[in-house]
Image 1 (spheres, rainbow, N blue to C red):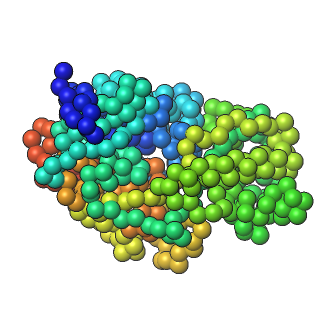
Image 2 (cartoon, one colour):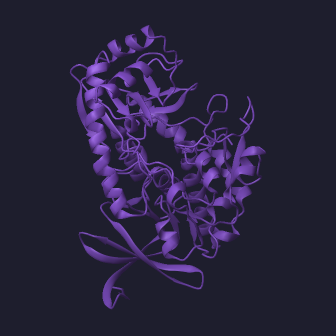
Image 3 (cartoon, rainbow, N blue to C red):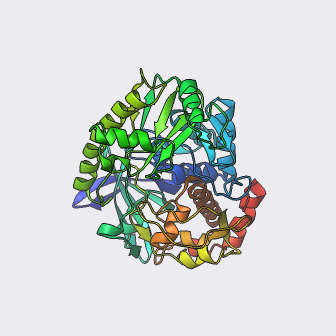
Length: 450
């Protein structure tokens, strides 16, 4: 048995894998499926008990659309996931407003099944602790779980942690926002025992037109006094059922295959939260649960169809929109969005707007047919040669990241990163030597729309 020294302890070393992925969330699960299918011996290290991260444990459903006509997918695996969900009555598409309505509980099963079918390995309930590096290379990583501390050594690593945990530990240069710059965080929940048809009829009678066909139902309120819901919320605040700060953002969606259930894209925590501060995160959960109770009481009293509705679940993860971001070979930013830039190493195309919660950005809107692209180089961190990053913590400015943090783009970054590793394994290269044009070609061959 091989061992290494860590903090003066002798711990077991596992070197069975070519690729280790930290985080099996939206990007990590997609990356893992892609890598395993390319016959790269892959391990996902996931701190929770299921794959999918924000999309499953965080209940971030449905996916936001890329807003290009027809909502094309830059990830072929994303297409496949949505197709399997539909077959299992757990997914639906709505090309005009949202892309990929899904049942987050069922998605946990689909992601795990696709990955295991491809031959990959998973370690659940396993937390990344630290990395050991030398000469711009990660030598091994330290994992903690019920088995204790174990070191894992691989040829290549993907950081899909959402907070750049592995990259940060390996001294990759970081971009990080402070204090008032942080985007708002949310704590989602679901309610069931809803008469969804009655609620849908109520919205239609109120004059809401969202371009949806029942059983897809969605409504929102963000302070617009012309909203069909404005008077309801105003009355609830006046009566003390809700507080004004509870209404920073309110949005609810039906869930495919669950006719009496709706997902709440709220509450948005009414104070700034540093996503990298454990105490502040704890306060966000506590405050979020208080607001959830008030939103449940409001919904039962004011929404026809909710009279007998109950809390079904609270998300296991905070809805964090951004925290650390790496400094990479290319930093996607405001000019890339404004100038609708295209790249020969593009791994995703989108027309999704800059989306900074709590701030109104006065920018030129993308007109019909206009779009921008995200380059592969934004996934390549500075300094370290056997690491790529995929997810919301890629190399992007604060405003640029707000446009490319949505699930369809995040999944494309995971797919692209995995394909780069597969090429590196085959050609015995470091990851900085991989040509992004080649990645784009493979993604297109797989069926991506870039």
